[in-house]
Amino acid sequence: MADCYFNYNGKVVSGPDGVLPAGNRAYLYGDGLFESVRVINGRPCFLDNHLNRLKLGLEALKIKVLPDFSFELLEQEILTLIEKNKIKQGGRVRITVSRTGKGYYSPEDDAGIDYLIEANTSEHNYFKLNEKGLVLDIFTGMRKQVNALSCYKTINCQIYIMASIYAKEHGLDNALLTNDSDIIIESANSNMFIVSNGVLYTPPLTDGCLGGTMRMEVINTALRHDIKVYETSLRPQNLLVADELFLTNAIQGIQWVSSYRQKRYYNSMSQRLTTYLNEEVSVL
Image (cartoon, rainbow, N blue to C red; front, side):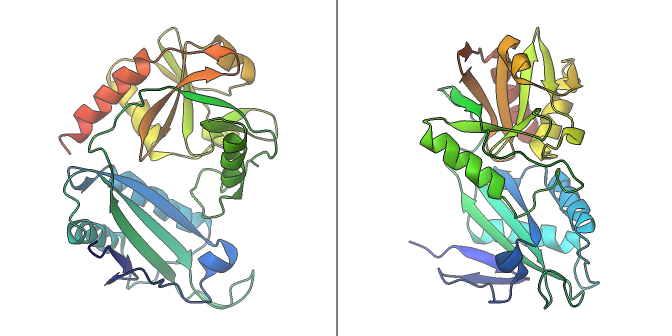
């Protein structure tokens, strides 16, 4: 097998050995952020949106970016790594950024950032709607708190891990998360939408869901095709009267849900939106 290259702080290296130093704050405290970017036709999709969210997340975490780093440089390094790993069609990129510096919970200095870029191929080039609908239920073991960091992809992902374990243990494909007010906000790895009478509804960021790049793209795509979209709080009773339920994330695009408890769903809107998304990314 050929070596897979990755980029650590601007240096392209290969091989299976780790590169993170023992004092890395991502490893010690989960002090950082990450972005997962879909690659189609060898090009990263919606990269500007990912980098913008990363920038806003760094500001929210009060992680300072030093003058020798720029997001323009990061973008070029992503493109270079995709080429280096010979990803000509479908793939995925993960960008992990953490705070540097010594200290425990309180950093002793503002030394800047560490970043790691990974790039791998994926099975499909374009977004592909799942043939078999997902089966899901609500994860009740933990609730996600609503705070200033709720909408960012921090590397502290314990609640999503526990929800994924719950789904696996109960024979589910995914699990829905709620906030402290028992409002359904997202799944273990995706944002969520329901469809009622041809109208899309999705939880607002103020309810604590991740500010997903695919969530934003689906909203914009729907509006461009004259499909109404409303951001509104969703409870279990809303799911029980919906016509469709689907999940969205940057890597998989749209995944339709076939059942929630005893409720069964269609997937016509999911198919329609997936077609629109592929039409858009084909000309990027």
